[in-house]
Amino acid sequence: MRAVITPHCFGGTVRIPGSKSHTIRRLLIAALAGGDSEIEYPLDSLDAFSCLSICRALGAEIEEFREADPSCPNPPDESGKRLLRWKVRGTGGRISHPAAPLDVGNSGTTLFLALAAAALGAENVTFTGDEQIRRRSAGPLLEALGNFGIAVKSEKNGCAPITIRGPWLGGRTSLPCPTSQYLSAILLAAPLAPAGRVTEIDVPLLNEKPYIELTLSYLDAQGIIYEKKDDFSYFRIPGGASYKPLNGKVPGDFSSAAFPALAAVVSAAANGPAPGSAAGVRGLTLLGLDPADPQGDKAFFSMLGQMGCGVDWRKLDDGEWALAISLPEKLTGVTFDLNDTPDLLPAMAVLGLYARGETALVNAAHARIKETDRIAVMASELAKFGGELWERPDGLVIKPPERRLVEPGKLLAGWGDHRVVMALAAAALGAEGPVTIDQAECAAVTYPGFLELLDADIVY
Image 1: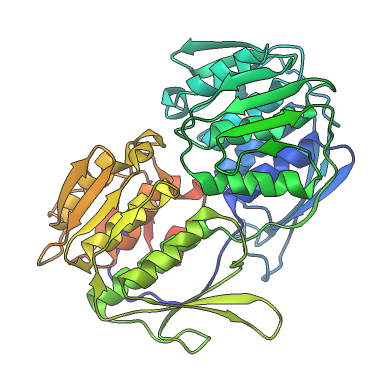
Image 2: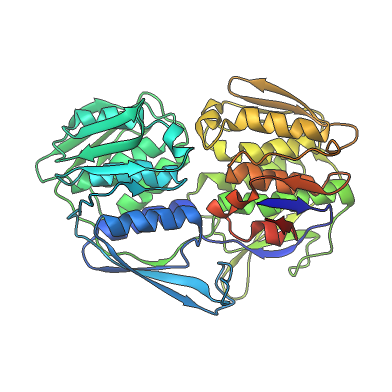
């Protein structure tokens, strides 16, 4: 699928869909809990449904409810109905063991977290995924699980297909975490190990620390007992615990919210600001977010502030928070450390294309091991806009062009990466003419409806 973006002004009011990180964690906890949980406004995306299918395969019963409710942040389906909630009857920690391999699609979060959950059982479970997933190594996680007495087998270098078999015996291991998902996987599964089994983890390397804070917030809400060092370099988790049902709305996704904000900033920088939002602020207003949420990617909005945008949280009369972004005439290039937030690199690279002076994105070598090598990919694609980009081992330096353009007759490649596609779609709002992006269907992995929000023409 290709998306054709015609440059125009973008702004107004946008309601942000549910967080992928919250949705997947809630779904896995509900699937492992005893009793019934209700997850309201879960993210209606490909990654979320990959996790749902895995949870069903591991024994959870999940019922879906859709209605024509315009207040729901999920996009309507072909019948005009929106995903309102999932009702999950959990397994109580008793894992089923399907004979067929379980396909996680493109969802790395699902793969890593479900690997550890499946290790709680005593029979083989095999996981596979799409081409990208089969290139993403779970090696450090598999080695750690093996040190807890769990049988693991990977066909190649820690990549899927991966077969795993418990029981979880506990013990102590060292786990370097170039991705935080390795540690989150163990933190979520270890409390459900048999009573008397203690899991200890030394963490000599930890990227993306805010995602661990998010995982720990769920353990705390469940009353799970664990010990940790303040710098997250050590954890001790006793077994014998259980998860309780959980209910409530999934918070909005700060990672997704970055892209409509990026689109508004780019279109204003290139074309002048769009008309005022419903809140009366020149620019964009985002609904569905919570400033107290531990999601790390909310740092995007403080980064916007450093580059010259106005960022204002307001509480509306109904108690909901609104985030208003006011747009400057010019953006200023800044150096940003993205170690905690590597998923922001594609969006931040686009901002650098529209800023005055150089923008440097540093300490984000782990952005190279996501769905794609996002450092190399963004350098390649943004160069087509006329910018100068220098790759570093751990990031990018971006110098904006005097005139932004896309070479005639050339496509922008989406590289099968949802964040790359969305970042390029926003960047295209400032191009000299219509821009075509290949593999645009990938945006639906985390943000169905985003391309339609930008009035993209979709070509199949």
